[in-house]
Image (cartoon, rainbow, N blue to C red; front, side, top):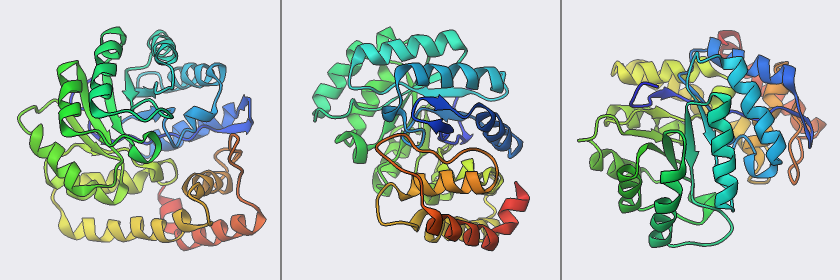
Length: 304
């Protein structure tokens, strides 16, 4: 795997037909859809992949099938975050055996922990991991906003970069500044609208959920940022804003992003829109709105 990690690495949704069954045909269509769109890697079992809601057996099935389908065309990253460190080790070992390329580590959720406790946790976790690992800052789900010092500690223990989903642009710039003398250490944003600024200021890419639906848009935006094509960036950013203001805003609950993303993929004929409990798919009214939004974004659908 070439370092630093860079480009568009979608946090892949987990296509399901029930709480214990993967939509295998949908998974294959989804992977080919994203790879055809030019993405640079795939991140399985993240927040968008509903990882904490899936059984270990289902996670393993997803990992194995994904690696078989990708066939090393792009790096496959697997989230191993768990409430149990032994659970994290189990998924990490399975991922290595299945052919994954790297692991993704966030703070263990449920128990609130301090920065010091997170660093102590990494002292135990990192030496036992069989693959390179990327850190994942996701304070809205883990209760911990990793300090720059904690990220530095992870780098010292072997991490190859960080995905920052805090939405804190100052923090993102602080990471870029801190690691600018470490060219192989990847700074990757999890906030799609931050993608151009991340690249223009020395970062490396984005884990963009919208690339499940419209991979070509986000790859084009990344390429425009690399080329410092400000006019092209301005045009493409309008499409990203349109997605935020329509698809991502449909619904009353914070789960609307994931519900809508899966609904779009279902309407596009890519995969089923079933969500693992405790979430539920959009109803008929919302699905009709998604169909309307896609008609307004038909240039993106045609592009992909």
